[in-house]
Length: 455
Image (cartoon, rainbow, N blue to C red; front, side):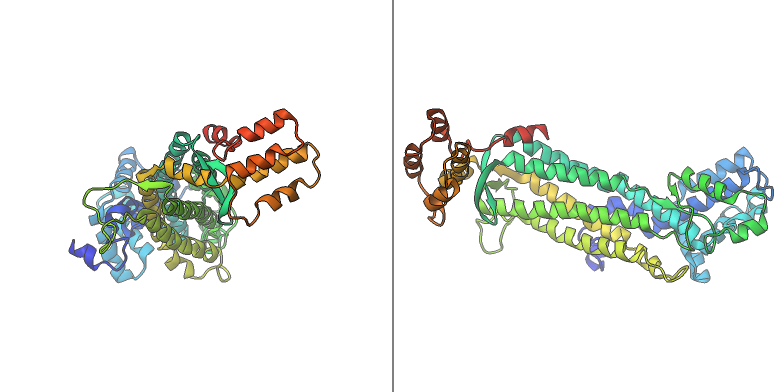
């Protein structure tokens, strides 16, 4: 508890329990672990490459030992890497030295010590580690959270597909919809944005100090290095970038962050709309025993989950958009500004996760109030001006729009009786007139219910 109280960031303090799932992907420990895995994978790939005759293949026992270290890397190992870094003042070089130290009793790896980090620049290791971190954070944490949100919205869409509701365009009463259709709208947008985020192809490279395999070719000219690098990178589950400077240009990371920011904007829209519908009384919120809404007003049940979500998604988007704009920009073949910025990927993901979980909590507390929704509809018979003037147009009654405008606009609402009196005086066929007289604000919902169910 004392650590939570003294933490500088709320992600590691107040909200630590809510963001813990991301620690396995974006903490300093996670970054070091991924570096170790990439370094070991590179060493094993060199040893297994027939055209690279400088290093003999490892025995099965040594290959297994390397795999175990990559798989079982733990906090004590990471602490030792950090201790080495205190001397080297270089985080990636510290991983190389730790690997030499870790395998000093293995004759095969000790003999191959100079091939750990062979021909690599730090970015060869880091870009692959960062891609693995982002992929893991998305697949294991963020995308499942987004799926939960979409599923809850789908449930609300189906449950309230038929519940007629007054729309508001420009904040004013407008053509009715259904509550379920409005939930379906958001669900469809969210699922589409989710697909776009998951579809981004993360890129990686392992081609040396300026992307030309300079040192590789001098040391081992018999290797087809671009082909070898492609096999290595794709073997990690990352798409290969054949043309880079010293750094992998981060365009794919920028695509991910842009896609997440767009998805978050959809949820910000939902947060604000849900807040508004609660304010209108369309939704009640389930009360949790022991909770307090206001320190002075005992009656209040505030929409805090949607407010919390909105605030955290705003923070997430500020970071995501900076990442997306900054990371693809590097002075000439490399500058170091990307390095410190990339350390905040987990911060951006953390605020995303807080926003998603708060929104999901808010959605889980919602209970529609059909009586309140129906009362709003019943008080807005003037929304039927649209279908009346449209049917009049269909029957070629001149000045249809203008007649309804004169009847309804700026009048503060008309009554059912006033509308029906107007209808009875229209030169319409009996069938059309009967259809309009049978219409109510609650039944004027078009195909909203069907659209909600079919989404």
